[in-house]
Image (tube, rainbow, N blue to C red; front, side):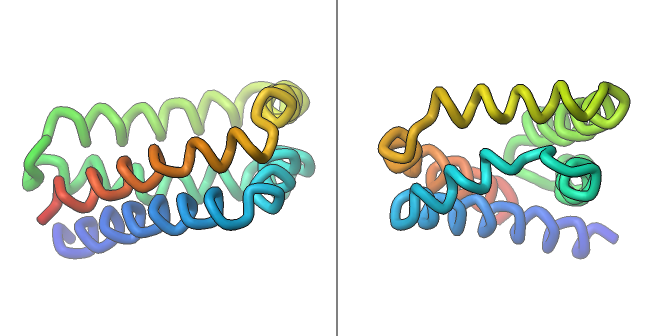
Length: 128
């Protein structure tokens, strides 16, 4: 179980790095993806359910990591916010995504790519 959780967390870190590359190289595509967040019930519940998978890995693996408190808090935060967003009207989540898309044009998405690289790298570092 611990090894599986470690693999989930590693995949999460790699995913964040991959997203960083997409933000850097295809910011318009990432903007369109952000713009679609919560646009349909399938996307809304799908993205929130998928978010809880690495969150569970973070919680399970936290005690074996370099930063157990941080990973524990991050995992529970991801699960808690996912459940909260599932309980709130989907239209609120969609409106929030639309507001974020308005505030983050593609050139800003590109500028934020290093943060995704750094956070993904930090997640990977914390589990090796």
